[in-house]
Image (spheres, rainbow, N blue to C red):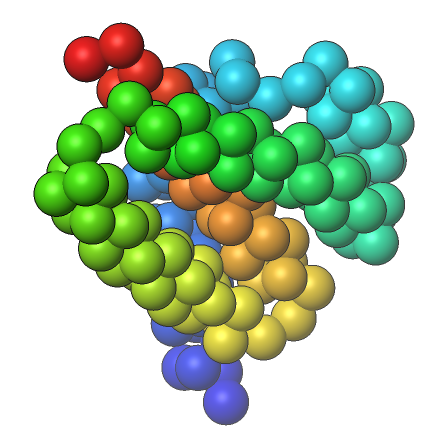
Amino acid sequence: MQKIYQLVTFVLCVFLALTAAAQSSADDEYSARYSKCMDASGGVTVNMLNCIADEMVVQDARLNTAYSDARSELSEERREALLAAQRLWINYRDANCNFYATAGGTLAQVVSNECFLRETTQRATELESMLGW
């Protein structure tokens, strides 16, 4: 059991270290409300999860708008290609972020939910950058 705990701790530490740079760029895209909410959470898991869930609604709407706007500017062939890419991206995001939840414990829940938020935010930014190509 001790080895499993050590492995889980190691995996979470590596994940946090590897995503620090990506997180800082995603932080620029989060709403001011999210930052205030996380600051006020006091590190309490349920409060942090609520902050993440609220911001996920914002970023998911942003993603959907950017996706729709990008599709409207493309030919039929490129729309189909974007649809295929988006489906694969969703599969990747879900599998990758759900993996972190399997570590167990409340920290794993936070890390998994932050992964969904970060990945969604980054994809929204990517799609927004395609507009006007």
